[in-house]
Image: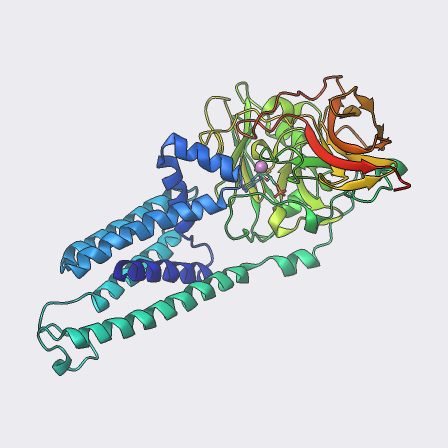
Amino acid sequence: MLGLLATGAGLAAAELIVGLVQGSASPVVPVGQVFIDWVPKPLKDWAIEQFGTNDKVVLVLGALIVVLGLGVVVGVLAMRGARGAAYALTGVIGLLGGFAVLTRPAPSVGKLLPTIVGTGVSIAVLWYLAPRPAGATVPGQIQADAQPQDMGVDRRRFIAGAIGIGSVAVIAGGLGRMLQERFAVDSERNALILPSASSSAPTLPVDAQLDISGIGPFVTPSNEFYRIDTALVVPQVSKDSWKLKIDGLVDNEIELTFDDLLARPQVERYVTLSCVSNEIGGDLVGNALWQGVLLKDVLEEAGLQSGAEQVVSRSIDGWTCGSPTEQIMDGRDAMLAFGMNGEPLPARHGYPVRLVVPGLYGYVSATKWVTQIRLTGWDEYDAYWIPRGWSKLGPVKTMARIDTPRSGSDKAGTVPIAGVAWAVHRGISNVQIRVDEGEWLDADLGGVPSNDTWVQWVYYLDAEPGRHVIEARAIDGEGNPQPEQPRPVAPDGAQGYHRITIETSLSSG
Ligand SMILES: Nc1nc2c(c(=O)[nH]1)N[C@H]1C(S)=C(S)[C@@H](COP(=O)(O)O)O[C@H]1N2
Ligand SMILES: [Mo]
């Protein structure tokens, strides 16, 4: 109890400092990351299965297990009268936090401030609450209280102190979290007007959006677009402080400001983005209109040296991903994006600048809040998710999703079976459905602006009354049908047919 209180108060104090001092860093995520790096493989695999590439819960849980677990030991030591050992172990927890923070990129002494203050607060709480040898006093306490063996007084003081410190800790932690939003970029984002792109978006074919209820919009509104990242608090990066550094195996290192980027030729393109953790039939996929500068143009200016096989991009929060240089440079619209659906990127989607690469899963291409691009050899560096059990190559797999009807529903008469299908950058040439493992039947496809987006599809089914299993599959632009063999999301994306079961009856009822 004492140990939990002391370490909890320390964590709360650290969060408060993060909220007060811009540029300081919470030790929670780094400790969680170090913890995850150390846990045995089976546990890691389990976590991947549970949380995919959205490991926030694991990060926080990991950090809390480590810190509070050690905190319990501290408490036991303190209660047994080993105060010196309790202080020392608290110091070790602090060192561990500090070490974890320093393993993150761009370490600085300022970033350590929350950890240092948090450790200090933990030790102070211990010092104040731990049972002390007879005769010792605490400031503000009258000498008479400290009767030898007067456990009643000690106990009361402990409970009052514990409640007081506990409440202050909860308030301080909450306040810290609120204050962290203070560095919010909402107002500058709202005031920002993007110049119109020199190469504007292709006009959408009129039939891109099929008129069928239950099928999602062709363009996903930004506020409905899925969000996946390891950030516990959305990074708030001001466009005026933002810089992008391009280094590594290049002839000329380049540093770009946000204004430099806006001054360059721009494109606007519809691109479908998908998460490798998207389950069959899942919604970790969306299609948006992205505005930005082609990465190829910038990299050509930097001058790629031989051996620059990998484009490693790094976010302000230290997250990294690696993409094959060949694909970035092959003419696809890989971009440094700052616009999404006609507006500056929302903070949660990477304001001010992120990467978007048609055809690659987000974990190997779509760095949000990007601040560095380093050219390396392919084997020279493994980015964030690679040592965590995910494939180094992450091309988006061909997939058809059935959006309507919902599995388990009852339908009468002709039933439109409809959804979306994507094979980003290869395009979709056909979508088919089959009923009860019968023949494959060709669906009608909506229009698309390019091979880089999903396509809507529909098949009007007149089925015999009864219970039916309906499956869908897509065939990509190169004629390859989506593989049937089911596979889980790890290590390189889910595979298999989306399957629903419906009950049909004659329309007359
Ligand atoms: N900085 C940062 N960028 C990131 C990630 C991250 O954890 N941190 N996750 C990636 C993953 S796994 C995906 S699927 C996409 C999701 O982008 P979205 O949240 O805009 O949909 O962002 C990518 N970019
Ligand atoms: Mo992802």
